[in-house]
Amino acid sequence: MKRFVEGVVRGQSTLFPASLDDYVTEDNPVRAVDVFVDGLDLDKLGFVGVQPLDTGRPSYHPGTMLKLYIYGYLNRIPSSRRLERECQRNIEMIWLTGQLAPDFKTIADFRKDNGKAIREVCREFVALCRKLDLFSEASVAIDGSKFKAVNARDKNFTEAKMKRRFERIDESITRYLSQLETADRHGDAVPEAKVDRLKGKIEKLKDEIGRLNAINAEMMKSEDKQISLSDPDARSMATSGKDTGIVGYNVQIAVDTQHHLIVAHDVTNVGSDRHQLVNMAEQARAEMAVETLDVVADRGYYEGEELRACEEAGITVTLPKPLTSGAKAAGRFGKQDFIYVAAEDVYRCPAGERLTHRFTNQEDGKMLRRYWTNACQSCALKAQCTTGPQRRISRWEHEAVLERVQQRLDQDPNKMTLRRKTVEHPFGTLKDWMGATHFLMRGRHKVATEMALNVLAYNMKRVIAILGCRPLLEAMQT
Ligand code: SF4
Image (cartoon, rainbow, N blue to C red; front, side, top):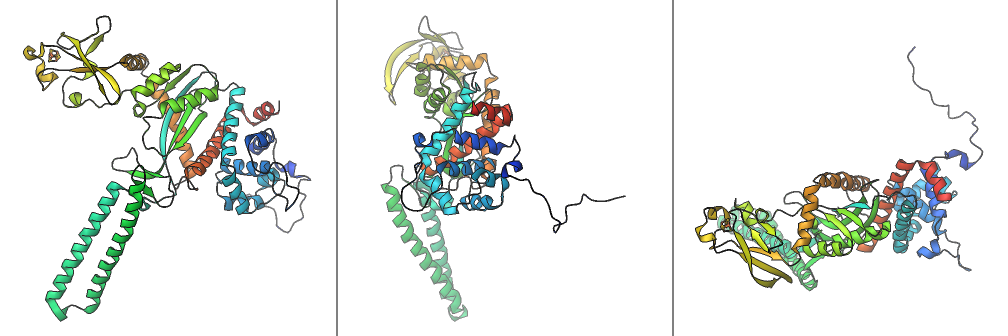
């Protein structure tokens, strides 16, 4: 006999479990949220209102509000209005808050007023992971990704964008004026409504010029000659796609290569990763409480001084050099075809000649040693080597640091695969959770709070997947 699974009849009397606790199984992740927050010293972390006031209406305990948010981010419910609704109908949430149902304004204010403390909570969970011995390998992959801010592209202005806008307006005005002239020539044959419409469009464009001029004046006062109208901290950033960009933030993460937990993260509004390596590596080292650290990153982080600072701090970095050699791109020998002989302080060129040190000069704050040979004029390979009278090779005074980075990569080319496998998955997951619009709040500090909650939820989910909920609960309770 064919049939469907039947539900109960709504009017039938039922016996629900006697207590709220019976609705939540022993290995439900909501229990991990509860135990984790109960174990925190919220006062020390800087939460507002941990001690109740003697007067006024009783407030919600910050622990309850924090649990509510962590649960929300674990379950992709970051909005305060949706959290308010879930407090009223979601049995796990009712269990977690003890049937409290704050309104959305109270929920939103808690996240707004406790940003710094919430970011500390994210670090507390990383410290817990460290105690659980989840960072035994002292190895991280660092990467950055662009996240969209609450700021449409049309509401962000840079000098180049402003110039393009003025040009487009000029073109439009010219086009409408020419249409008006044509209408004039045809006299009464052209309906008056059409002439009025064209005049109206020109007036609107003139108003737009006035508006843009005011924005332009503000923009030119800013340090980086850029202005975002909705979120003033958001910046225009190029993304990996050709001719694409977003207005947003550059989120940096350091992910441990063993368990893929986010050890450290940062939110910047600088579009480039070039000066983020030391910052992220040092943060990761501090969070993992290790003396030495292995770091793998992509070529976007390649910067001589950053690599030198890492080496001096005991951080071993592996990353590829950017492919910026003009000679190589033009089909000639690149610098990598010249072998440095340290014992003699010379370069050996592809023709076997010795390029000796001639002089040292400073360029962009770096001391550069220049090498060349007089044998180039009679060299059979000259066409493949240089278009000038002789090929010159420059060597930064700390070039040995860069050579050691290259040696490490040559010895273990799989590190780049390890980097991709480690760090790209967390970004994909976080963006999927955050949806098409990414951030909900405005301003760098508030956005950093949102990111901290997402990272905390990501790490919590990951640890539950690695250890299981019950072992995590037991570890937190000991
Ligand atoms: S052109 Fe000069 S540097 Fe280049 S291969 Fe010939 S000798 Fe060597």
